[in-house]
Image 1: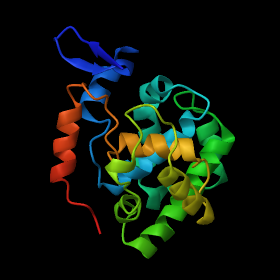
Image 2: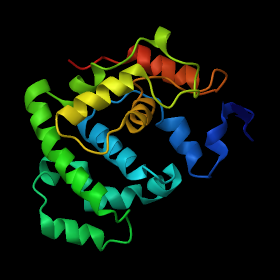
Image 3: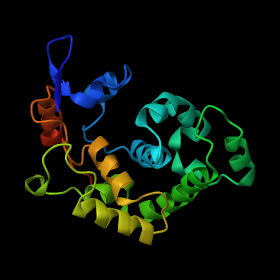
Image 4: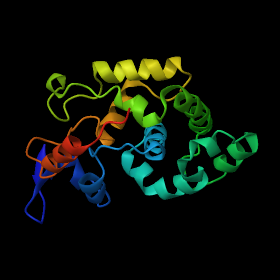
Length: 200
């Protein structure tokens, strides 16, 4: 699952799949996140990715941010039907009514979740799994914890948050370190997780 890159460093093989993946792999994927907007953005974008490639979503990410108010869920929660029509007409994003409406719905659920848990970060990090119980890196697409988190989100009214989507979210936001064993970034992500103050 490792590939040697031109700089001589081994990395996860998927990082060579597209030119824009390298920076995302080296600087974002697997590093712990406690910022509510980034967490909300990522779980929404994982929902948009369903049935598509991450490359498609990554290339459209800046436009997604622009049209969804920087993923400020308090703002997105106030979107209405006119906003849905505006978004459906925007070629810079994925124009899927169900996913757009789910993002607005999920923003409303996020507002309620913050009232209940204090922050999205505090809520999501409650589901950090025990590393000892994880599958070998990049060999699983779901886990018992992603199933549990998916069920709880759905119970709270969230949409497009199936176990696979949630697992990809956990990988990306550093709740697990799924970099390949000999990937040069695995140690960096591990160190970041060690120094990370879990939100409460």
